[in-house]
Length: 128
Length: 323
Ligand SMILES: [Zn+2]
Ligand SMILES: [Zn+2]
Image (cartoon, rainbow over all chains, first blue to last red):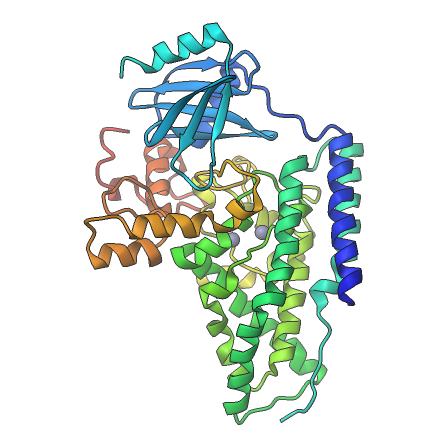
């Protein structure tokens, strides 16, 4: 196949499919409730004993405390991603916190929290 | 030697068909309200990975091709390009695919390339196109050497390999539950391949087939889809990025970081590169056998069921406190 035609097909195909998905509402992020977050965490880490779950006001972030270690669960497109808070940096951010996992498969997560939540989350993580 | 053997690049010619089929699957799911899920960024990432795979073929394909042509120079055998020879080549190349794919899940160096095909939590036709950019660096082209030395022309081997990939496109769907029984018995199908994409403990390391599922049955890696254990798609540790560059290279970066830590023996460094995924020198990670054993400790009722044959929870040390 001539390269130009292949290139046009690929570019038009990809952008067309992307546009179609976006316009039909397929860009919606997963919204977490307390129970959904609990359930999603166990899906990622079936061995954990979850102690409590704190979901952010927008439903896109949850702080999970387990018997061993805390963890962060967040909306990742229509699904979630999750990591234990073991090897990470925790920075203040105008919208809440910025979490840098030292992991190439997760650049950074900006956790959007309001003022009250921010104090609460800090408190939850502090006693460690 | 056969002179001027040329075969079309099947994968490129299939691109319009891929696009059309994705549209059909999407509309089908939208109308029926079942049979799969689509998500914008996930699908875009998969499609860009597919385009990048073709591009990496343009850029790096010459390395494998030069190697194959060198083998073709030294072999005294030439089977020609008759239709039966092409068919036999297709079947043998599918056996080659089975082993490359199995290595892809059991050797971390090869997994670093293949992992991105499994990095979506979705399973639809776009997932089929989420293909590696780094296959050349796995050196898995050597597995094709016997085919060429046997007298199958390199261009023909690459052609049937393309057909193999095209076959595997349509099985990445939840819209088809089961094919007729005879078909499920011989061929790789949506049902068999869904299982291969599962991160459920039961479904780890099975159904490596490309076109014919018989290889898995022959080599003892076949696990049928279980009504009672819905497939959970993705990786044991799902990635948190849609950035194609990170998707393509994240496991290579992890290998580098793991293998270059201070204070490791040479043996441990090599294990980080070539042992099955999940190896760690300090026992902080789990490989698939350990994941299965831990699952059995939590769910003893699954002992001896498909995917857990020959596994026992007690084989895994340090589990007593968990169970
Ligand atoms: Zn695979
Ligand atoms: Zn697949």
